[in-house]
Length: 368
Ligand SMILES: Cc1ncc(COP(=O)(O)O)c(C=O)c1O
Figure 1 (cartoon, protein in one colour):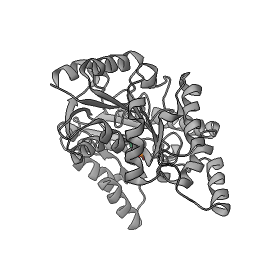
Figure 2 (cartoon, helix red, strand yellow):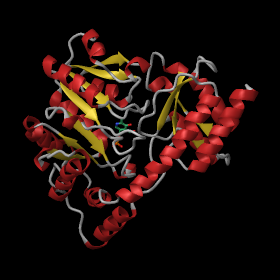
Figure 3 (tube, protein in one colour):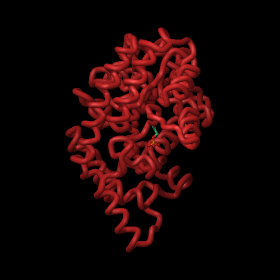
């Protein structure tokens, strides 16, 4: 967010910025979703919905699992939320007591540890690297001491790596044996390259799934997401949702329902991300980066820049200042080793990504 702010200040001062720092699609919600929302705005008062979301959206989400994963998910187990963020808070609240020890990948999405800490839980960092494709593995869990839960993202932010069926099965097995909750954040599902991301529900019905309309569905500002929870958690989650937020946003639910049928438009965005991904990975290679996480999905490349600096924050400040290219330093994703890593987002326009990588390659190969 600090990089985004600095980039915004630079733009306000009249200088251009090529944005490789933003973790969100550059495109609007699908056209059918915007039309559906406009029609409702015009003709229908926006009342609260059920705390767990509308029946039609929950049924559509359940059908999504049939279409994408061949799974029969009971719509009763689906709870619509205010984004994946709202879904995580609800899931953590119902699953974990104060003092619970919960494993999180490092590098990983920084809001998990913050949310867990704010709820009185203890996030337990699991240091991951290329040996386990930047994802937790049972060996990390065994070394972590007692755990009450594990939170993973597949594809991951910041690394983009996907947990395949075997990896998910191994984590689910470990958590079941240990009596620990497994929470899998599937927010980047639908955005993968040459591989597909299995849902944890394919291997473990007792896991908690987090998902969202913010990434594949290109609707980050609509603040809509969902949980799929095991039967035992349906009531507790609904009651908490009712008390904490009354209901997820009504207008967004209407738009989200329509968006789930806009896969042609959405898959075209993924095709653009794939083009951008090749440009970024090629550019990083030309910049001399040798440790780059396998970018299986999402729209991120996670790259070590220790051949350029020991202070990625200062490096990103220089790139913004000298090149007008905004990149995220790794420190938030990994407080220990992140000063040697950066995250590049390729969710933007291909022309911007092309130009940004040319500037970075030129800087890395000549100017510094
Ligand atoms: C892994 C991960 N989970 C959750 C979120 C939050 O998503 P939402 O906009 O649905 O709250 C993000 C946002 O970037 C993310 O990267």
